[in-house]
Length: 312
Image (tube, rainbow, N blue to C red; front, side, top):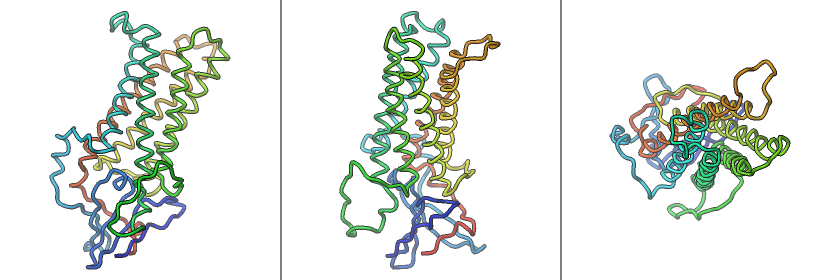
C-alpha cells in the first residue's frame, strides 16, 4: 500500500487530502475534515474525461438527517456542546434587546450575564474537544506507524501543516478569551477603562480568533483559499460558522468603539443584535454537524479539476 499526500503550495499550504493506493490498484481518498470526524474515505476512479471523480461508498444519505443520537462519538459531543453554547448566546442577545418579550426576572442584567458566561464555558468545552479531535485525527498520520495497530491518544501536539488543527487551536484560544470577556462582565462597579481592558478587549480578540478559525476551516475543506460546494453539508457547516464569526466580529466592533456623536441609536443594542445573529448561525452550523457525523455527504460526487489531481 502506498500513501501520497497533496503537495503543499501557495494555493493550498496545508495537507488536506491523502490518497492511498492499495495492493490491488484501488485508490482511496482521505479528506482532512472527514478523517477528523472518523468518516469513511472516498473511492478515486478515472472518468471518461480523463479527470478524477471521487465517489463514496454506497450508503443511504437521507437517513443521516433522521439520526440525532451518537454519544459514542466525540464529534457528536462537540456538536452538542456548541449547540448549547450557541443557544445561551442567542438567548443573551435576545433578552438584552427584547426584554419585554420575556418574564421580567428572566431578562435582568445579572441573569443575562450569567447566561453568556455559561454559554462561553460550553463553547470552551466544545472547542477543547475539537482540538483533541484534530490532534488525534490528523490526516498526515495516515500510513505512518505499524499497520493495524491502534494509535496512542495524544493530549497535545503541534501540527501547523493541518488547517483543521490550526482552526481548532485558534478557536479554542478565542473561547478562552470569551470566558474572560463574559466572566469579567459579571463584575460590578467597573469604570470605562476597566470595561475596555477586561471585557471588550478580550471580546475583540476572541472574535478575531473565531474569524481566523472559521476561514482556516474553509481552507481545509476547499483544499485551497476558497470553494463553492453547496451540495456538501460540510461546506454549509463551515460557511455558516464563518457567517457567525463575521457577525460576532461586527458585534465586537460595536461594543469596543464609542459611537460617533451624531448617532442617535444605541450601539449596544446593535452589538447585542449581531451577537444574536452570530449565535443563531453557530446554532444552525452546530446542528448540521450531526447529519455530517452520520455522513449526509455520502451520496455526493466531487469532481477534481486537472490541477487538483493527485498522483499516487
